Structures are given as C-alpha cells and as structure tokens.
Image (spheres, rainbow, N blue to C red):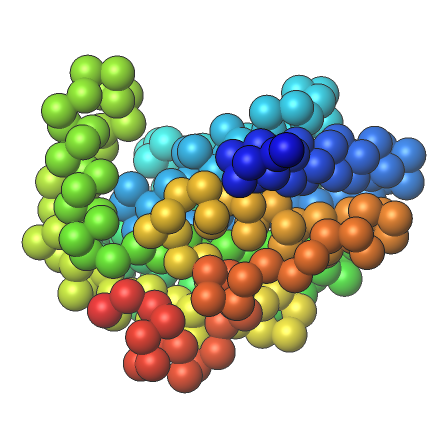
Length: 254
C-alpha cells in the first residue's frame, strides 16, 4: 500500500516526464519559449530552475543569469544584452532575473534614473508583444514570499558555508528595503501585466508546493496536447494570474 510520500514522488516523477516530453515536442516542432523568473531575494528562483532543468537537454535549454552590465553594455540600447540570449528553434531559455531588473533592483537601489525606469515601463508592453508576435511563448513568473520567510532564508544563507555562493551584496538590504521593494513590485506588475504577456504570481513560502505549481503551469502552457491535458490546474492559493486586486487583498505579501 502506497503512502503519501510515495504518491508525491510518483506525481513529481510524472511532472518531470512531462517536461521531457514537452522538450521533445519543442525540438520536433521548432517551438521557442522564454521563461522569466522574478521575485524577492531568496524567493527560490535558483531552486526552481534546478528542478525545472533536472532532466532537460543542455543543448536545448539555457539558463541566463546576467551579471551587472559592463561599461559598454550601459552604453547600448537597454534591451540589447537580453535579446542576444533569446531562443532559437526548439529551445527554451530561462531568465533568472531579466530585463525587469530595471523595474525592481534598479528602482530600489538607484542604479538607473527615474526617467529610465519610466521609459522601461512605457516600452516593455510593446517589446514583449513583438516577442509573442514573432512566435516566442513568453511566460513570466513572480515568486512572492513574506518578510519573515525571507529573513529566515537569508539567515540560513549566511550560516551555511555551502550556500556562500548564493550570497549577494543586495541581501544585506533586502529586509531594510522591504517596503521599497514592495512598492516597486506593485508598480512593475501593474504596469507590465498585459494580455500578450501576463504575470503569473506564485506564493513561494513552501518551496516544493511552489515548484510543483510552476511545472504544472508550464506544462499546461507549452506542453503538447497529450501532456497538457493530463496535468491538473495548479492550486489557485499558490499560483494565480496577476490582477490589480491581488496587491491589496493578501495574495501578495505586504
């Protein structure tokens, strides 16, 4: 007789198989996909990517986590450094943070000007519409956690030498600037959620539940019919499409 742990493992294995079958179908059809992962510091982006790519082909899967721009890149068209990483036929590209740095980290820490930030929010709907119209499937996730959970995870990073490579200088101010990051998040989601490129919000306080929900959503969005139809809809208490009401009704952490 199976137990709950065995049932969850079987369900996780089925989701991983679905990802493999999806990538096989993408390679056959030439489908292109971009997955954007944004969220609070310590929201679980790295772990999510590790789970997503565990069994995928390294030839057809790329993870992009860009460092701060060089002096030359700062003199380029803002979108240029990101466009060069976009997928070719049959590829999926996962951005661990993305062009939305301009609406989040840069806003809170003054790394760009208010005029540049406003221009970004004016430009991003049209930019993403062009991507979608070119045939790229664009899926944007916002991973949200509450303040106490972020504090716990950041302290765990500092105390565990195996997590030393995850530590960022920005971690030190994440809690102090919590309210500023909240305001930036709200403005970003409200200003860049469009029918062409909607935001999908994920309550990521429980890592495994969040990752399962993300995989289910991806399979329902980009999986071949035989895969997508067998995947149940994610729990709406964990994963939901952004709407302005979510800013104040408790679904997004304050």
